[in-house]
Image (cartoon, rainbow, N blue to C red; front, side, top):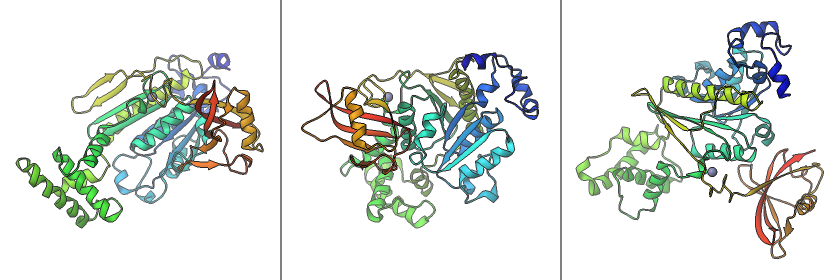
Length: 416
Ligand SMILES: [Zn+2]
């Protein structure tokens, strides 16, 4: 198939209608370009926000054949300063749905599949059959979920992020450069941890604010709402009492500082979004050639930081951590098993035993679904179908032995 693709003429391909050829005329002339490779590509875009809408627009205009758009959010007015696919009239509608509708107008020749969902509830088959995963996500948790899927299905993943006038782009290839867990704790997590574990005395002025927020959460079992002034004042008063006591020389907090700290949404602007999303998109177009055996340029595997205030890029090499529990040599082994969906989990076990895994006589093996939001225990005597186990679902198995050593295992299921 790769040879066929390589020989394919951009201009006389039977894959494209006359209208499509005219539309794409300028890019068909690019040296090294293979439009058919893009048309045959499937891309997952996780997060259809500031970055995701721009990336989806770019992928659609470039003629990528199938886009899966995943987002759990609905459209809010605060999205409209940078999210090109949405307008006032769409407020309250799912982002993924409205994006798919808008993209169809931008390029009707591609397929747009929308998922109003979190990453876990999307069928694992979507990730398994995609050529590339692209993240436009704003949370560490969601990024970790996506990167785990990149590792399990051995897919490249292009991450991006923006904060104020800065942004980053990072293309991850499982095993080749560092995953998120190779260096797991972000600065904010470390700060939060420090604030949470501090008994009584805040070490830094910023800990006073975090403690104010934790105080509110402990009283109300929920985070404070940034749109309710009274709640912000409770956090402010608590923080300022601590600040007065421990950091009196540095002054008190303002209400604005409290809102910015409690609200995790970083301020951002369309220009930084557009730069980062464009960089992600350009790397994506090259990767979609590469995964089909067509060499177009080289992929940048460094962590790239863009500083929009000085107009400069910075590059950090990120070698993988060999000891990483997700992608290093200590990571749980993945075995792929093809099996009819009418099989019981017991039958699955006998297949695994043929791969030199044994029962641990001391402990019955147990199976867990780990791709769902909450890991679920599954039963040995029921069929995979009866337990709604999806194609390409990953099972986590404990209580097996290999070479007489206790071992945990991932089984990636291909259902027939
Ligand atoms: Zn890693």
